[in-house]
Length: 483
Image (cartoon, rainbow, N blue to C red; front, side, top):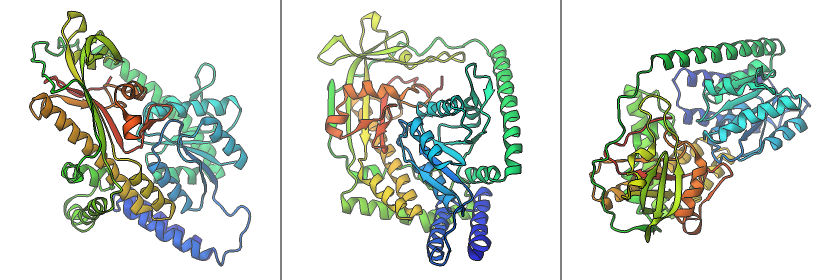
């Protein structure tokens, strides 16, 4: 206990402090967690097991409909290595299952993760359900789709949504923010103060944001644009319908990997600069990337596949209508897109010719997947305690899928005969088309299930996770925007 409490746990705290100060990148934190796990495993041979030898019990889950769990896994690792008992329920976990497990274990807190905007709606649902049952578990929320504003809004429960969730609801931007929150909640005196301060902060933040929105609405100038130009040449595709690429050459994808994004975002070096950055790239990242590329080529465990198609298209109000490639008068699908409130009042449908005028535009759709094998390897590494290797491999897979999306987008541009920089690729879940459930429409048009072995979660997320889908807009004035 002396070694555990006075050597190992303080060392992990120092690692966390260095990470928070930007002195350590996340993979190195995970390496320290591997050492911590090995040391604790060794010490367990000499520790007398006693009930209650834990700082607290936390139930973790990725919410229903969401298959992304790398962040949640990291939270579990950091909490476990800092003295907490973690029960990880995995991904795509319904609210009822989460609450029942918390009740069974008499947990001290619940941690929820979501990557997608659509699945993040499960979080306020969980808070509301807990409140309606009279249960008081602090909620720790995190993930790419989550920000402080979202958490403030999610905190309001009750029939009129005017009560702040009484057990406390907290935004945790990373694993160490989650650890700091749990440490504060574990202190009985600090807990009440923390929850009270959090309620005041939530109410103040919501009021301030409402005031800013109202002020911005009063000051917002009228839109200065009449919408995208209609006087453009519509490109002619080489075929109409769908094609499947059963294999995409891996070397061509390797050349398209955005290394800066891989290293800074997915491999944790976003704050590294100067000589430190150069040393990380030279000594750690470049050799690891080269090794992954060689192993993928030699092992055959990465098999990128894709499907894409060209469809006659036209806009009807805020909807993009697609027509049968063999009969351009027969509607086969319709995507309803949101329109901006204010600003330029943009909507994705605006980039296509109006269907009512009788003309037909062309829309391209694409899906790329890297398959299951890479994620399975990453998961096995994480489960075996090789946290850093699992993290690195997962990031490599994400960027490989994005490289596949860029590869296919370039092919579509070439086949349409348009400039390499003309038009844009819009993926569901982002600003202009936030509804993942429209993937269901996409799967009716492209053979993702039948020939690519893909599927969708109940919330419309792509399975496998390392997959991408997009609408390709050829209009030269296309730009990214949020609604």
